[in-house]
Length: 287
Image 1 (tube, rainbow, N blue to C red):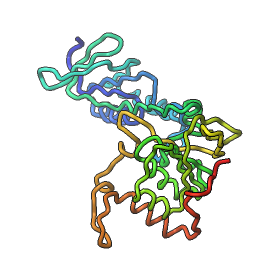
Image 2: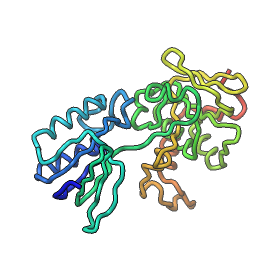
Image 3: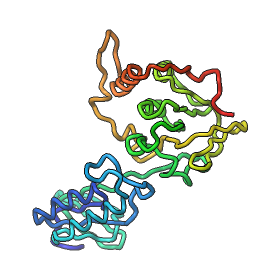
Image 4: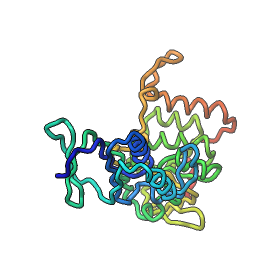
């Protein structure tokens, strides 16, 4: 046991961990920042939606944060991870490090990011972060006006396809033979003229700068990037980012809307896109 107790132990050295560590240092609070050098966004070419750093490689951003933290010596950066944590008798926390030490702190901040569990489809892992992504806000701009497929592996696939409608007018929702689409989902997809391709996906492989989705029956669907839902510790990306304003039910035009964000996207897209395209129920986009 290492004493005296720290003010805060921060688990995770990304921007979400370095930012509070910087604030702690500027107030001369005693902190310990744990860094296993395994960032969740390591495969990304650049971070986005972060003012002043849009497009900066993740490793560069972390290095910049470490350099800015350096003058504040009340916060120690340790190349170690947390293996266990528990409340102590004083109401603080005891944290066991992977290296064998145990530290106590008044507060524990978990900023270690998400654990991405990729769909069990051959080829996804090899193209992850390059031509396969899961967050339209993080990577959608880079694939604007290109041919995109959404691989439905969870309940939020329609949500993903709707989000991408503002970025491309060539988006295919790829669903397995047992994937159920309800009437409301079909109506929403029809209002934005999204295509649907049904089939058992056996493989995704790179092809030039794009990729090919291969089905069990031999068909192939040529796309450029592909968005997929992930099974994560926080369920899916869209569930992880739920906001009460978007998910609360409202009464509008005499009907009850359960998902305000989805309805807003549908209405905005319908109002701005004048070119109708048929919902792909009868013709196939795959060859």
